[in-house]
Length: 382
Image: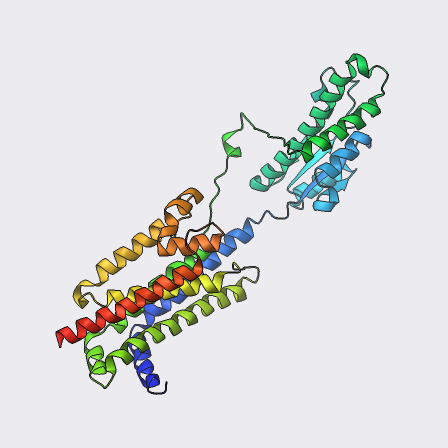
């Protein structure tokens, strides 16, 4: 292995001829990851800060509080309406529900829905406010539906001997049985204002690293395919085999260093980031493909190889969702059959046709094919 080390050093010096170009392949993905991470951090809605003021203090309102989450899910409960309003103004809550004193009193209203009317105080974050408001609406809709069912049941002749509490318990037991059998509640909200419809932007985080690993590997292959240097190296005894092997090893080493640097710096600057469990294996298989692809590109004459190589890589990234997140239907149907689409599908947890071992074996065969094609081309030219 020692005779290979000086040749690997030569290959590394060839890569360092374009330090700015190679540095961009490390700096840009870090900056893009930080930008995406900052956007996600700013719009993190995993912990919604909602609240409710229970002014009724009856059985119905006590059901409403835990139903929408209560303190168990980070919702603040208070009987002081002024404290709730003050928390909204200070930005401590994203939305709050004011439960009126007559909440749930179906005898005092003509329509059951009116018994569950509440006041909602919106917060300053429109997206979080919309999510909390929809959560409250579903809660009140469910309570109103239960009230209507109990009212309808009470009009039946068989219910004349039953109290309202007995009807409620029977309805609750029937509901639990229906839920165990797979019944679910579907809610469609209509007539919403335009401002209630917000765009959802998906940031393909791992796609950034897939993209720049591919670019780095392709540029490295093109830089190492220097005709004059390769001719001198291949003039040595066993030079062709050593030149091919050291090119692959150099690109594999620099590709691994790039992945470690991208992941490490991102984790350092954004400690909350994480990668899928299969990230090292999938990225290793993708790197193997790029090594094989780079050696196949080296078969094209130097003055004509950049455009077709870049175009083929662009098409694979585009069809595989490397630039924008594509629908799952596309990825499972066609996107997974591109090298980059397969990698992104695996990292996203989508089902793929070819297992990891089969893809790794196919790229290894492709690398061996590139070796024999280069060998034949070299000796034919000689």
